[in-house]
Image 1: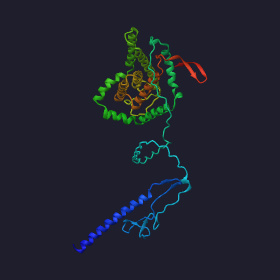
Image 2: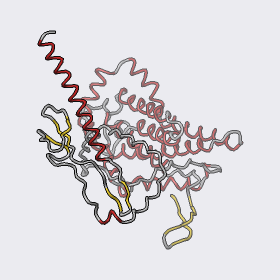
Image 3: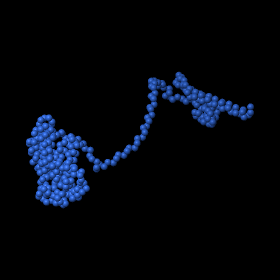
Image 4: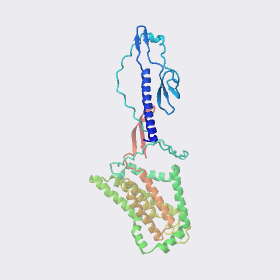
Length: 408
């Protein structure tokens, strides 16, 4: 064996001895610390073996230090201090305290589950800026109730007292209507007056354009179809004939024709009132027809009806009066009726322009007059059951009784 091998073997043996010595010293130190107490007649006396140390070599290996032997490096428990017994305090000689009552073993509760933190909330969206100066107030509004269905009364309509009285009443209402105009009514009146004035200024240009560029065989044939619809006699016979048939069927009990009877008689009333007002306007203004003059401002005042009766158009006013009544009566459950009625009336008015019997302003004013007269007559329908005297309960704060009303 070489010298190097012998040196390595000796080093390994020395390390094993050091580890063994350290383990023995550690066990001895533990034994000294946990040595049991022995009881004597005079009390309790602690016994232990003193003078042993445990030292730690610079390389970290513990070893036993004999009494009186110098120890290098760190020493446990106290450097260069032997372990010596200490006298017990007086409290230790007293009777031992009773042992606490055993506590029943409880199963250890499982550790609380770790809560997973929720993801961070997104930043709040900024509220939109509202201009409260233009925002409508959100006050509770009463829901609009649909109008009650119209119920027509029984009886022979031609001699109905309310119907006969409606003739003078409607004439009075027509002439005094401006006294009861509200803001909307004045706007409508201003609009009609504005359109009439514009048409007066453009009458010559419009009539020449129609006669030169529009009129032809097609418009002449169409005028032949529409023209009879605006004749006073045709409308007169039509309304009275319709009433006679409706009254006959209703009186027999075969068909309920009360609404048809009312429509026919109100159309007849509107037709007559419109015709009277139209003839009065013709006589007062004395405007010449386009076929008789090129001057759109040729107003001669009261004169001969044969040539000076252009303003306003009788065909237009009378056919629109009847169409307005029919539309108002049937539009509630037959919405297509106004479209048909006013289309026929418009065709009749344009036939008078095509025949060069009226200016455009004549037919427009006549149509407006007939339309509003028909509206007036149907607004105060004399054949509805709610007309006349009505009685209803009156329930107000501090007041109770009956409310009597008379609708006219």
